[in-house]
Amino acid sequence: MLMPCAICTNLQRHIGGRGSGRVPAHLTKTVEQGAATSVLLAASPLLDGVGGRCFVDCNETEVVDRRSGALHGVARYAVDPDNARRLWELPQELLAGTS
Image (cartoon, rainbow, N blue to C red; front, side, top):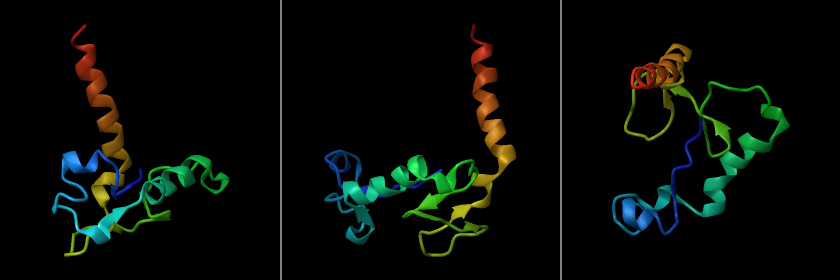
């Protein structure tokens, strides 16, 4: 899992990003900065077989149990393997019932 953050693209102006006043300027990234973590996770042999973790700014982010005022870290429930399994299986069960 990765969090690219608010990336400065034309899409941002339509969804409340840069220029909308909803995202502070210091939290926005260029397209290159926003893509860096995705490229690292997709291409680095150092991360082969690594899963169930969250990355921000090309680094693994800490797991937090409670949010402070700062926007950092990933909630423990978001990287819980049992939650991931349920999230994968539930839509399959719901869709199987629609055929």
